Amino acid sequence: MASYALGRVRTAETGNPITFSYTVGFGDKVIGLLLKVDGAADRTGGAPTLGPHTLLQANTTQKAAASPEASAEAWYVVNPQQGTHTFTIPNSGGLTIRSTVVIGRANAGLRFAVASGGNATGTNPTPGTVPFGSGMFNAGGIGFAIVASGAQSWAPSAQAGTIIANTDDGATGGGEQYTVTVPGAGATLSWTFGASDDYGAVSMYFAENPGNALQNYMRQKAGSGVSVGGIG
Image (cartoon, rainbow, N blue to C red; front, side):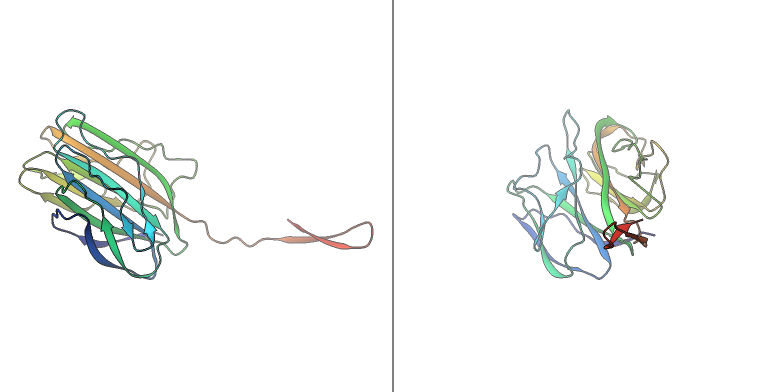
């Protein structure tokens, strides 16, 4: 069964690049990087890295189509190399970025399953529903979500998953959440927030690898008398 751990919640930074030291521990099967970027412009400079790993982006950068005040990004690496590395977040535009590091753990390992993204100007931000099924998610999986909102009084009353953090920056707001509960069909990680404002949100889910199955082998006699092996 997968479990969640918080790597760190960082204060807003504007460096180019933003860097910090980070230690990947034993059992850390997924490292996720959730970015809330202030302003109408997208973060530029390329993908974040963690030591030897270039992170992969889940879905796309999400922000409202009209007059966005912040955008959301979700990045990840599966099976990261253990040890102390440098996290590097390119930021060639010198934007204000708040980064959160999250960790997924599972004895059998984790693999990327699916991601979704959504944006609008409205209440109750959501990254949109995900078509669970076909083995994309299971009882051992884990999911993360981030929202970036223009709300100046960001204070959701609830979220569909379990809260990681909610932060009101004064001019913008945002939050992160996770779930290790198997979602139903059409489920989504969303926030209950009654004030209408612009937002962008991304969710990403990881499935637990199946356990090693014992393979049964049979032996058959070939016509020549040579014994050959086959998988049963």
